[in-house]
Each structure stands twice: as structure tokens, then as C-alpha cells.
Image (cartoon, rainbow, N blue to C red; front, side, top):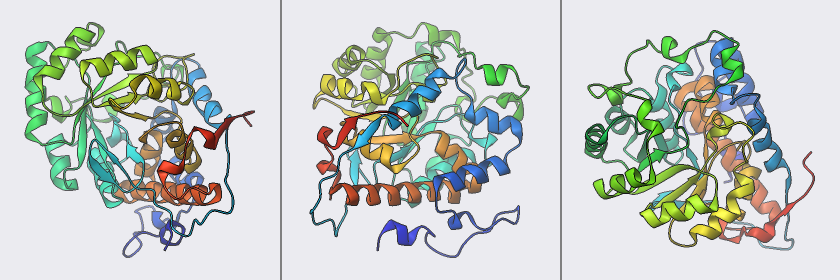
Length: 371
């Protein structure tokens, strides 16, 4: 049975409080996005859509994906398609993970727990953000524990040691450190509005930082030397998020990270920046077989996932799609997003003549005119 035949999920359909049909009845990503927009007030909707500055990087992300064409091979036996892979030694059912997002309770009251539960249902992994709610230990207990934990370094060495100890006690799959946010980016869409997610979520310290606090000024002074100290401080697999150049990728691997996470923060950091997919091949070449490479930013369809895998990514991560899934139906919505993406990946691979992810290679993709 293909994913196209199982998009309704497992078990009885769940109707939502607004009286709409159950989220399991939504069969395309566009339907998920429309349901999310209808479910959210204008402030949270704009918060999820917003990019840095005039949002050139946001637009470039999508244009770069659309500027890659897929190259099929015909007369292949594609009666069986396998989209499973691994990440940090963990088996995952499809090459799509959930990216770290801080203010998830803006989109659904269950926040990061709903994301992790939805991801676990579909056999994949969540990367839980340090600024998200509920706390990481609760997310682990409610979702089965196959999650990574993401941090910003927002304190001194003692602060970081305490946070890493707290994280380690919850037994995550790995630790993801974000390195592309030395300062908070100006986002015109939000500056022109009145929505503030910190007020909307009660203004309290995120549960993962209770008793520790947070000083953003330390993010400005986090350096390669500090990353080396962090690497020495923990035995957890380490993922470095926010890499966009081959030079930085090589340096990260020299430090001893297990995965390089190519990201421009979904266009929410540096405006007029490079898209992630246009630098993917050079990062993969720089890393070689010394670490895994994953990426996010602008991923919207199963075709994007196939392009990323063909160019060397182990998997992609979804941020905004995760938020829209939450808004559309909580954990059920996140799971449905993943089901739709899986169906699209399987369908795309069959039409390309690829039976496994390993059969997607750079020859499967060609640069062309974005439409």
C-alpha cells in the first residue's frame, strides 16, 4: 500500500474544535497551509511567514528549489519504493525531520510536544528548540524520546555546562547548536505589526531555561574556540546549525561535529543571503564522509526533498510546514504534513525511476529556469 492510499492516517478521523473536516482529510500541502491560515489570527500567521528585512532570502530559497529540474530514468522496476534512511545512526521512515522552532505554542497550545508526537507517529525525529514549550523532559516522555535538543549559547561557560547537563539527563538523540544568530534579525513584516510572540506566550522564561535565564549578548561572542569547548564538554552527537559555506563546514567537521546543518534560518536571519540548496553540493564535497549533511529553508514539497537527497543531503528539516501543520491540527496536523510529503516523495521517485534514496544522485538534478 502506498502513502497515497494511507493519507488518512491510522485510526478514526479526528475532527477539530472549529467544526472543520478532520485534518486527515487534507491531501495536499496547499490545503494544510490554507487550513493553518484560516485557523490563525493575523499576528501569528504573519509571525510564521515573516523573513528578515524585505524577505529577499525567503524568496531566493523558493526560487532556488524551483530552478532545479528533476531528470528521470525510464523502464525501471519501481514496484517497490523505499524512502527510509538514517540520521545519527537512528532509523527514520523518511528523509524529513522537524526543525527547531521556538514559539510553537503560538500555533498550537501543545507546542513542541505536538511536533514530537506527530513526528514519532510517522517514524521520524524532532529537533526540539530551547525556547519552545513544554520542557524537553516532558516532550521526551510524551513522544517516546527520539528527539534532538537545540540550543543557542545565551550564557557563560557555567551556564552552558548547566544547560548541557540538563539536556543530557533527558537522553536526547543529539545536541544541535545554532550558530547563525549572533543578533536578532530585523523583520520588517513584524516591525510594521504589533504581534510579539513573547507576550502572546505569557512572557515567562521558557521552561528549558528556568533557573538559568538567558542573555542574548553571549550569542555575539560565541566562537569556534567556544564550540571546541562544547564539543569536549559532551559526548552527545553534535549538530551545528546555520552553516552556509564550504569553509565553515570543513572547520565544523574539524571540531568534531557529527552533522552539518545547512540553514539560513528559513530566510529569517541574514537578508539578501544565499539559499541553502545552491550551496549544498559544495558543503557536501567539503564534508566528505566525515559527517552527515542536512538542510532546511524553503522546503515545501516532496520534489524539494528528492532534489536535496540527490545533491547529497541525508535529510531535510521542515520549519514553517511544521508550524502550519500544528495550526491545522496539532500533532495530527504535523503527522499529516509528513504523510503528504512521504506520498509526494514516493510518487516523485517512482516517476524518476529511483527505487531507493541512494539511486537519487547529482545526475538526477539539472539547473534550469525557475518558474
